[in-house]
Image 1 (cartoon, rainbow, N blue to C red):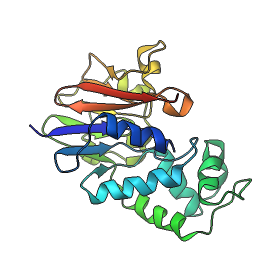
Image 2: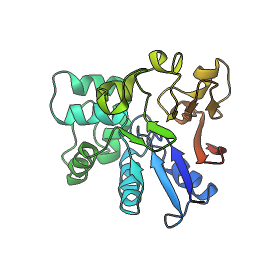
Image 3: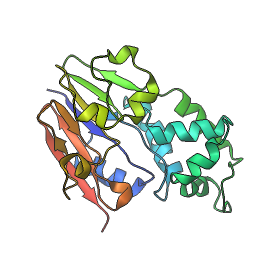
Image 4: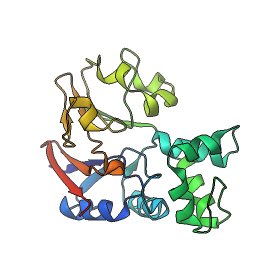
Length: 224
């Protein structure tokens, strides 16, 4: 049976991302890779992560948007106060990955930045199969995912994971697993209400997780 490998919240950690793909034995010809968003911010190489994600999509990966990717897009689109908001949420390392001379909240002028903005604009907000819903932050309980505002799909927290009881298992990132279980472990969280939280808090010194389906096997890597 073909494996599905799911990763979320890479946050500019290109070296960890590459190490995790290798550890999981990812083979684009044999495996379905699903990425749940938040490729940018906080980590050292958001540009490199997006370049890699573009390559992986060409090889068949399913690439979804996260809230940090949406903040990057809003800033680039010139929405009022969006650049300042993005900067408060870890954008400066992202900006510097395109132009090391940047010291404050200012948009890069490089072609690669705007190519990546165009790529983010094309991202979907969820992927649904017969048994699973894959999404960055979660779903709105009681509302079909197809009818849900994308803003909710990339930002929701407690209103989803504390009350969800849907038939399909929701695999999501956004909220670090240690918050979901209320203690220190960054391992993938398997909730008893049909949710699986895979954000290992890599951006905060935690770990980058990969969920294998249908086996529910976990892989992870940490900074040394």
